[in-house]
Image (cartoon, rainbow, N blue to C red):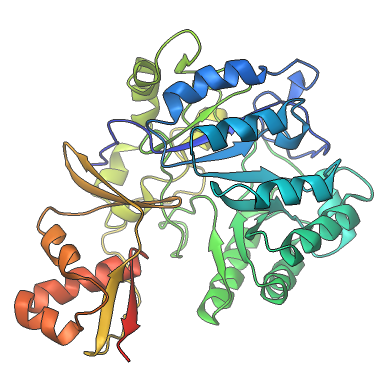
Length: 408
């Protein structure tokens, strides 16, 4: 069973339908409404009045969010609300120097996620549909990195970049940034969508890079019954939701399900609406008896919604046993230090939040967590809490809620 938070912690705010790309594989539900005017900043203030008290992190998206005519005013609102945020962008910026310098002034700014769909113009522009977009994106990407912005690449796996995934990973190393690889989500068959065999090969390549120390991860869910990987389950409707350009709340940026409108109703009404409950019920019954369910969450629900299918098309059936996580080698003189940024108490138990990570824990883990002060070595913690305490620390480190330091 999956428990959902009493209020969402992660939001995507889709500021505008306008976009400077013309991606043939676009899966934006309002891609045909690009000429419709978005909400003014005054209306986004009303939305933020409800979102910010609940939000751990918001992501500004679109369309292309920087094309909102009052984008700077919306940044000022996030500064006023002291709301941590990230920016998801294609980096085809009208005023690159202004944007980069503006973000550098905001302590609430978290990271800029830049869409890069190939390591060559041919591959990238096969996805964006805009000649010359590769050169402009690369120039602004390098400018953002050299200026000191925290940057992450976002790459959709498609048929024209399958041979370039390794090069994209190497580029990320060169720039000193992370890269998030996402499977392609589209309503129907697309010539850009990889075959299942091509996707398996792509996932294997990404996992090889990860094992070699590259800073790569998966941006959306690859069902574990399709292929074992480091991918994790989707949080849409669990801890995450999207607010569209006109205030509609949906479980996911790709979903067409409208659960309510923040301007005409309340956030909590939409979060607990019958439409959201129906979304949560999209998990196939068989998934609940799968050994990988807690990791996978039943695959991608939006694909079953968009294609009117009973489940994620990649799913192959429940697993009777799951692969154990890779071993973590701990030294007795290491001192664990918590690095999560928020602890929420939910009816089902405590939840740790850090960036986009949402980690439920058992109540008995809190005492161990409190003792992890960055000064107490594992040997002393094992003496106090026994082997169970070390298992808890290892599990939290694996979920990136702890790091280890060594005393001088």
